[in-house]
Length: 321
Image (cartoon, rainbow, N blue to C red; front, side):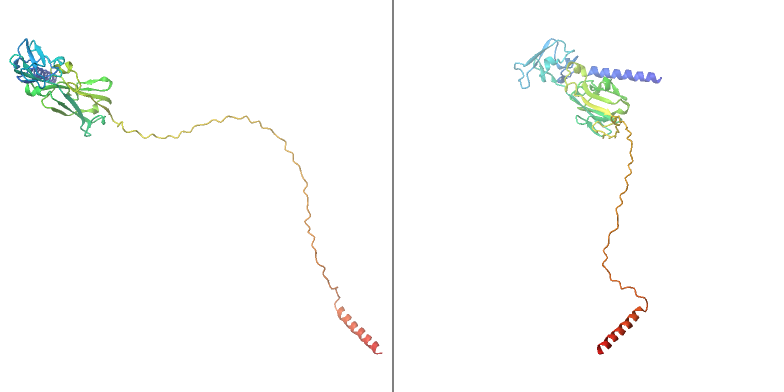
């Protein structure tokens, strides 16, 4: 058998198992639970006969008293839990004849959580960035799991995880993990690390989950009931909360100054020769008169002295005579 035929056989087997599980999930046991929005249910085993009434006595009503609501059942093998008839009327429903408990009506609930397994955080309203290349896991909290645990032959409650990426592209699988008709049997379903984001384009993504069992998501498309609130995030390599520091680039701006026309006039230069004024610098000096002895010839002094002595002698001699 070739690989192509093997893969085809596996796909057919999976489709058959899914079909059987979906078929078995519509059979309601006595005193079982049905969810608002489910259609095509077989409630024959609950004691409800064709063309009879089922009644609801309210949340605190007494069985056998006047019912608060009455619903006519045409075919118990093809029963529809209509939102128009059963919204706000959850709890026990009884057969009108004999007041026998037939089943319980419950409001479906579903929510989804997204985890970045690589970085170890949950994607929330305050953490809306997933680094490209990280691996993601999903957790679906629900109450429809009892479809798989209480209904005979049911393999689980079918849930679909929806992912919408950039440009509105929706994914039915991530890597090798199928996101459609996942069968759950517990109030908390965890996929484990199934989505390696490195192979997917960057951009904004939305993730939500839907309870698809017996078309309840189509018949009762209420957020938090059959469709979870969306978890949105941006997948890219750079954290959008980090603002890059702006780089200051010094720009030299060339300023053009207005051109002023200048006329150069040649002025003839006249050289004037000015005669230098000579100021006499002779300063008259007053020299006190100095008595300079007359210049005497050598030996002349002695001659005068002797003559003087002679004259004096003559004068003395005359006086004596």
